[in-house]
Image (cartoon, rainbow, N blue to C red; front, side, top):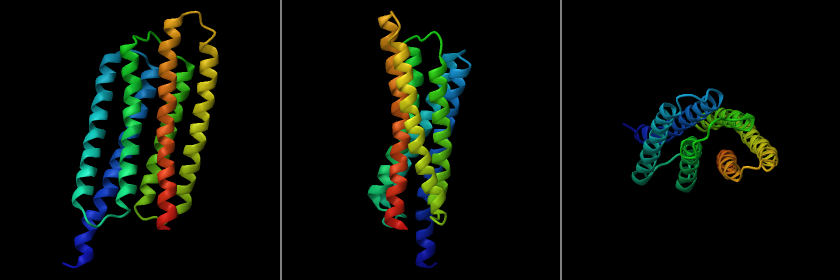
Length: 209
């Protein structure tokens, strides 16, 4: 067996893990959108969300284990570490939002939550497409397009947050203001974490193409 064949399995495992994690992000974002659109059986839906978050943690641990024991990697170790962390952060923040709905005993969702969820679902699809492109780096324009779209969606989320807070501060219920402000801000942070992935895409393209 030649050196290339020995290296290939190690090389491919990272892309497989990246793609698994991108799929996990899409699952989490889809479930959050479902929660906001159909606000019933919250505890059961959150149990499902927690299962998704645990899947994400397991993939993250596997990626770091591979990184710690693999000498030949497709990208620089720090690039892989940054990408692994950024992917995991998105899932963690989506899970945090779902958990806050339970902890704060939120009685109903609103149009702003639904808009945020739409941004996160779209971001998840862009992340998945960009991750798939990293395997060969042949279609750099698609990866660049994903980065641009992730940045755009983060700007959309900023605008949603601005409108949401403007309406919220018209409320006379201070407890409700505190609860919803925290949820809105965490939703916006989740889109920030998606944008972090776009920055990793850009850094990889600069160094490796």
